[in-house]
Length: 91
Length: 525
Image (tube, rainbow over all chains, first blue to last red; front, side):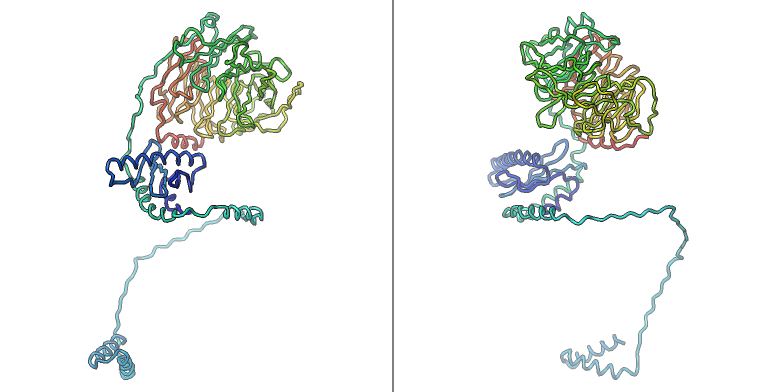
């Protein structure tokens, strides 16, 4: 499995790989959660990236972390794909 | 010997400046020459360990068992299916592997840092106004019911969370009563809410003992009457709100119906009504709205002989044969399980799919009666008034009765995990909070609704709601699932109070689910 190393880290609840159009390509979560995460996070990453580039056009987004009460979502964006990892650090 | 020879060969080759090969030949010659006189260099090293301690012990197995397992040879069919699935897997999207290689290191570093970080420990973010107090928003009354001294027997929020339906009747009646009563609804989100005048009043010929709003359709309300009838009202109809009723047929209950609940049926989106009465019957009805009647789908009868006995229960053979049902709870996790509490204090886990026929003489019902009881929990000393399954853990439920205590049970064990003393008098209803896994509330005969938080180590209540006079019992309450900070409480003086809960009773904290899991995994003594 391509994401075995990441899955084995402490507290990782799920991994989703989304392509540039926001369609999930690989996932370890169930279907409905995957679709939900993929759609919402794609929009968020686009917004974050445009924010960074508006402030400084020479800059670009490299990593996005969203921390919530229950867990943390880490997003590594790229030209063709996004990697979304959901971790519960206190697990 | 070897060292010396090497030394000589090196010297020789150095002096003669010849390649090593000749040096080797020279070495061989030298070796032959020096074979006679042998120069040996000895080196000695010694050590000794400390005294090694040894001891002898003997062990004997008392009993032995042998067990073995063997995997079955994989089915031809499953093998073929697996192959098909693998082939059907699309070829890896282009560039995916490269992307992952690029990104993996960065992500793993962040994950590891995050797992060790204490940066966010104890950080509390307030998005909403933090309300510290529990306050009464409205006190709803229906004057004509109050004049007749009717008690509020049941309250239920509609699925939208804006309408509260209240049923009136009596809780202390022993005799057959022909008193008329009513069901009132108030819409709290409407401008011009009159607390003394209900938006809708439905007249009912007898006392209403149970009420339940439909989980999807806001207009439908199911009710159980003192006469044993089960009715569904459609509040969107202007003329006659009765959508369906059981009437007095051979199928229906003969005793007061103490609980009704909407049950999801086999077909998705359809719901049936489950009614339980003190006559020992639990009946599942489907609504036939065209004909305005109920069709009996399944019938369960509980009799003493068919109640399974757990090891801790002492069977007392006394009184009548039937097990009068006073409370019912459906499990949101397992559609086949339902819990039943009886007048005699029995607490049973039952199954919808049970096929055992009930040991009851047939009275001309359209469906054969079945015995649903599968497991028996430790019985209580008085009637079990209320049971509720936890929406956050599949094995937990709370039960309350006349002993003034609330017992937290696991579905897997006959003895309760935790028993909390809530009041000195009866406890009429207990319900889990829909938002906080560790919180539940109990309505007591002393007129209070006590809210307990299992996360706190104290046996005292986290909050107490006292409404009106202390002499009137709080008979029923309901949490609002859509607006979790609202709680409706009904009392015997005919008033329904709408309370707003403080934020700490409604906001879930991050460790609660795991704490609940810990409580559930305890083993009761």
